[in-house]
Amino acid sequence: MILPTVARSDCSPYQLQVADLWAEADLLTAVMAGCGMYGWRRQHQLPALTSRGRHHTAYAGDGGWPDVVAVRAGVLLVVELKREREYPTREQRAWIDLLATVPGVLAGVWRPRDWHHGIALDVLDNPTRHMEAA
Image 1 (cartoon, rainbow, N blue to C red):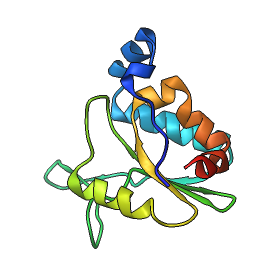
Image 2 (image 1 turned 90 degrees about the horizontal axis):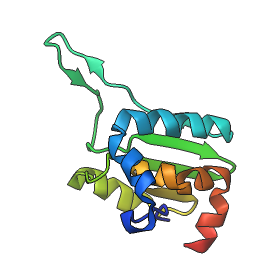
Image 3 (image 1 turned 45 degrees about the horizontal axis):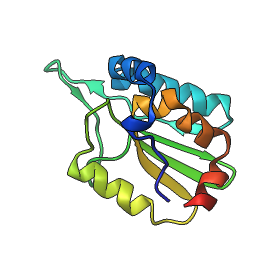
Image 4 (image 1 turned 120 degrees about the horizontal axis):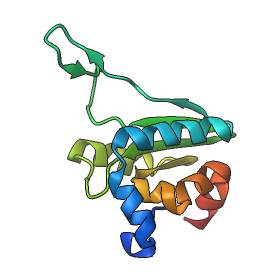
């Protein structure tokens, strides 16, 4: 199932102003804390600093794996995090679209507005409600 999100037009001016200030790292911190608060086992892969001073996340296989993977009570949550007005890469979109077809999986893209509007916390609190609605 695709995760619910909030359109910019559904946000208050204040929510948009705050959301526009958040970096992806701010959203990651909030989502990881929210997952922990609601009892999810969660994981995010951190990039390592190479000898050339660049950050690189090692992996084998297809690129574009989503930022956060969490599981709780038979539900797998897979989320790609993006700043406002940024979009997933083709590879990231392919993972999200494919994972969303798997029973018991909620997959999608969250932006800061989804956090500030409350939909992300609502999903973390009661994911089955959003699976039934899809």
